[in-house]
Length: 139
Image (cartoon, helix red, strand yellow):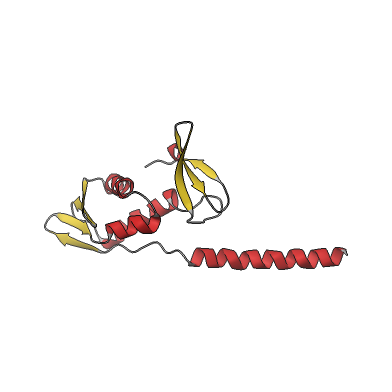
């Protein structure tokens, strides 16, 4: 009986590993589509990135502006930032945003959302239930 239990347990562990790899593969951090317009950098697919992350565009814009050290404005589906920034620089900041505000810190699932608990803004994972205070993350 013990060997049946162990074999079922092993099979279950393998299935969980397979599901975890599928879960990570199904979500990709979008690449920035940027171009220069005078002394401004335009993020052409800004709204698409916010929608992919399931986050409010204002939150993403504030983060990118802070991390790029400049002012940013939203223009319909695009965002523009004062100054010249490479695609690599913008992509690094987008990945940093995903790490801090999209992926679960416990299970790496992208199925997270912002919630408020006793006036504290938190990141809650719908996959594993983990919660983390966003005040612990430096913007």
